[in-house]
Image 1: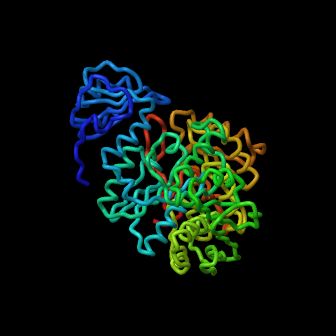
Image 2: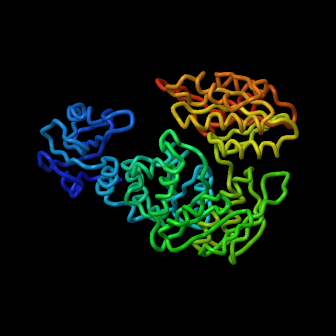
Length: 492
């Protein structure tokens, strides 16, 4: 990517009141003083934990030449006062990178669970059909020959537009993007209009940030207000919340999908992509009705009924873009396991499932599927993240008690919260403490769980999935559930 400098006034024109009027050359953009370089335009805002206006002098000493702020600051350099610096960052980033979003087409996926697998299934279908695709998601950012480990599911707006600019340079046509509630609430995708938006499901998560389920839903709904007029919304009608998302779809087209019989007489839609789960000892089979464009049995390599929903969501996007049934079938049947998403490891009759499940609903679904795989008991190892949604902890404890035969509570990412406090709050939802073992060291907890397994029995290791670290607040350690399981089972 050839990045050109821009004039300050060109970047901030119309955003607010300019103080110390001047027009320096802006070489780059920054909002973290640890990354400030000569010629940077520095953004400051009042955050939840810190007010970065306090670091203006440090940014100036490191070479910042101008600023975007939310209140007056003490400097002789030019700056503009805006109402919302994060929203302004998105607008300025678009200008700096020459509006790359206008040269791309976008698929946006939102929902509590299923975003990652759905996005990867869509990419599989698009790639096989011949579209040039880029992916922005929880695990990776992928385009051309690049595969970058994701720092955020939806990057901050500056990083997002930088990536989009690189995609334009690489000749990418379609961008498949997981769009989180945080990203929508913080204006990270400001300026992007989506050709297709997908709703997977809606259950409890992120209440530490959104405070209420209503606020959480309102944030997610914003995606469907960003759909182009000729664009499309795809909705999982088996989740009762779908109507709230359907009602705000700015696109004129609607594709519905699901497994259950639902009364859709009062809704306008282009197609209903219907699935029917079929009995299968190996893998997962379902019948796909591709609404007047084909139908047939799909044999998935991945397990779990939620993956049928992910397949239906991706099929809905493909249907709207008129991709033939045979491409959809071939792509779904060749779709490989996503790291840390119901990933099954087996050795000597012992079955271990590693999954990212970190919400009450996702833990319930994983344990339901584990029960179907087990020929005996189901064990579960999990914890809850520190400094996150406290309300879900006893709920997850109750679900584990109801659905597993034995529970091993351990550390997830405690961050700056005391692990003992987190475990205690999970225990508040468990009445029978006799079916619980507490082992704070996660490696030892997984090791203990595997030792408990009899032939044909299942251990679920939930919460971290693909992650390769454990966060203890002041420090992080390298840790992968997947690698630990493989080592303990003798698969490495």
